[in-house]
Structure formats: C-alpha cells, structure tokens
Image 1 (cartoon, rainbow, N blue to C red):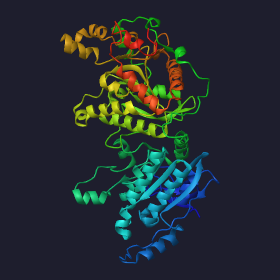
Image 2: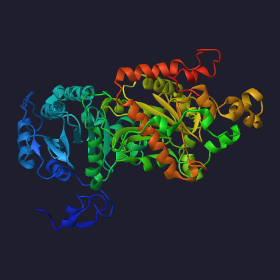
Image 3: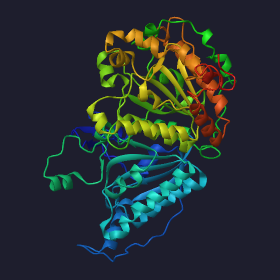
Image 4: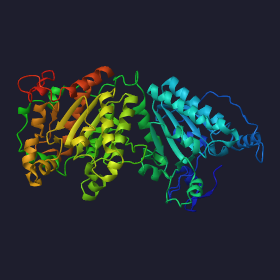
Length: 573
C-alpha cells in the first residue's frame, strides 16, 4: 500500500504518495533519493519478467552463539519477518534493456545490510554465476558495515568477496557497483569499491569509518558533504553520479559495452557498421602531399582556441559514451577525460587530454589541458579496463605538456608518466593515438605509445614548447619562432622523421572552421587503423608496438634522418 501523502526526510515537504512512486521515491522538490528495498530496486532496474533467482546458499546462522541484549537468532528471525527476506542480499539473473546481467542487491532494512557469512556467500555466488555465464555483474550496495554478531567470520567475508571479484577480473567479465545510501565499513572496503565502474546515487554516502567514529577519534568537525557521492566524485573515488531515473539507461550502455568476447584481450571485435576503410586512402603518408606551412604558423594553428577539443570529438564520433572519472586514489583531473563508447558500432575506450571549453574560465578549470598525476593514473585505470574487456584504445592528445605545479610534483608526476609509458607498451589491445592539436613533451607521450601514432594536419608534436626551447637555448623567449623551425615539430617533418605513421586531413581552413567535418575525417582515420589492427593477436600487437618505438632514431642507411620513416615496411616518403 502507498500512503496518500509522504513526508520527505530531506526537505520535510509533503508529496502525494502516487506521485512519489512515479518519481521512483525521489523527492520532486529537493531531489532526495529515499531508500529502496531490494525488491523495489529489482523492479525498477530489471526488465519485467526477466528475473530469475540465483541458487540458494547455506551458511551457519549463529556461528558464535552470540547474545547481547538479545540472542542473535532472535534478531535474525525478526529481520526475516519484517522484511520478508532470508538475508540482507537478494541475487538474481535478469536483463536491463535486454542486456543480460547478474545482480546482487543489498537491503539495509535487514540488520542494516550488515556483512555476515550469508551475505558474503550470496555475493560470492552472484560472482560465480556471472563467471559461469560470462555475464556482467552488478552489485547494489547499502550497508552499515560488518555484522558484529558473527565476529571475525564476518570480517573474513571481505577477503572472500574480493577473491570472487578477482576471478572476474582474470576472466575479463565487467563488474559494476551502484552505491546507495549508506555504504560503510567492510562492504565499502571490499566488493563495493573493487568493481570496474562505480556509480553512485546523488547524496549516497560511502566510507570505511562512519562520520561519528571519525569525529570522535580525530575530535575534528567534518566538512559539509563529507563522504557523499559528490565529495567522492571530486576526489576521484567514483566514476559518476546518476540520478535514479537515469540508472537503467546508464547501466544498459555499460552492460552493452562490457559483454565479453571470445577471450579477454584477444583482439576480436565486432565488425564496423560500414565497409572497412583502407588506411592508405584516408591518411596522408607522404610529406610531399602536405601543404608547406611556416613553422610558427603551424604552432599558432595547433593552439587555435576554436579547434575541436577531445569532448567535441567524442560528441561527434561516439555513440553510447559513458564518461568515467577519477584515479580511485585522490582526484579526478579535469584535463583528462575518457570512457567507453561505440565508434561506428565498435566498442572502444577513448581517453584524451582536454583543454576545456571556449571561455578562459573553462580552460583555466582544465589547466589548459595540462594533466596532473591523477589524470595520468585515471588514463592508466581506463586502459587497464580496456585490456580486461578487450576494447581497443583511442587516445586524443592536445596538451602543452604535463602540469608543472608543485602539487603535481608532490603527487609523483614523473612516476605517473613513466608508468603510462610502460603500461601502454604491453597493453594487449590495439592502441591508436592522435595528436589533434598540441603534443607537448612527456605529457603528450604519456598517451601516445601506440600501434599507430597519427597527427592532425593542424597539429604539432615536440619535446618542448618553442618558447621553452628559446628560453633555454637562445636565452630569449622572443626567439620562439626560430626554435619552432629548428624543432621540426610540424606534420611534414614528423612524417619524414618517422615519428608519426600518418596525417589526418582537416577542412581546408583548419579543424576550427568545421568541427563536424574535422571529426568525420578523424573518424575515418580511426576506423581504418582499427580495422587493420583488431585482427592482430596480443603478442603481435605488443611485439610490433615495441619494434615501432625501438627503431626511432636508429640509422639504417646513409641518411639517418630519412631512413627511420622508410624502415616502416615501405611507408616512408
């Protein structure tokens, strides 16, 4: 029965009961997401008629013969009577917008959703079912922590569930958690935060220790919004906040992209939606095909504020894109964006440096595309996820360089870049990198160790900015145009040097003049390169990728400059 009127626990306003139900128990005035029972959650998320309960599991009910003010069996019996559930988790197989999924939903009404032996076994059984059928696993969490009445046995369920998720990682099966309010203690420190993607409802709280424990221990007042989803997103701990009405569609997009293929990292991918493109037909590979451009003019064109950003390209090129956030350690760097999507029907992982929007304030918010260590760690996390799911990786590079600030140095900027260079060298899936604007120093290279390295006709790529080079070597920043010429950083020279494998054409007046056309040309180039690379097995990808970079700068004939490009199976000038 739905009450005629419901009082919102957030704003204290009265809501007509039927309207409250239609709004999925979200207050239409303040947006507070009221708790849902496990059956309510399943009804909202899963396609009607698709639910199939998982096999029941047997565990000990009272392993310690525990009694506080009441015997533990009495508390269990009362919880079962009041909720109609056997335990604090309900596990089922089902479908979300016709995408198969295994779901384990926690119910906070049952002893605060506490983690005990039965809960640990039910979560583990859901993971086993997911592994057996190679179907993505969705965990919906709501918990106050470990179940004290089961003592250390409840603590050990954290390890048990972590092992179950590790098995899914090894098998290349997507895992997603939906964090609801509240999620604390042993659940937060195990399966809730070990999934590939973490989605949170607005206002959901997540943490290891509860706020009262923290305040009593530290004797400090916690900041407003501490441990909420919004706080966690800003600090790199969750991937996205999705209001309840949008959960089904958001989850369906993820489930569709994450359905595993024949084997993790096999390189096997669905065929593109149109006929394969020949890279030779859509890429410029002969320096003489490129218009000569004065070097400083090339630099200015690459920096043109109207050039398409990474977000612009993603918006034009990808369907079903789901942005992922955070390095899962400390921050969400706005200068690096990425997530899974579909390029002409092919699931891919796109990661790129982002300079921000057209206004100065938007660019300052993204540090003009200069990534922090957290940005490179976020990129690495997404690349590892791509490797797990067998998704090709596309990187879009447009940055003057890595963030040079003191906080970045304190956060291990050099190590973060170095780790990406190593990771990309051994990634078992195809990688195509494109310098779409500026490619500056190690900050650019950290996303450009790829099987195919391309550059847009209006891009530049160099070890240092012309201004920096002029200041160091000419002792005069005004000599930047001279340094730009000496650095040979334009596409013609980069192609001749063998630094890039091809140049992506742009509209006649530059990419800034026609974003849609520039994106279409880039999309053709990416599709062609991926069509060439996806049939390769992981060993071939890694070997050829290493070979590509090992030969850079190695003399193979009379002209050491020209021959690095010519050594690439006849594709030189």
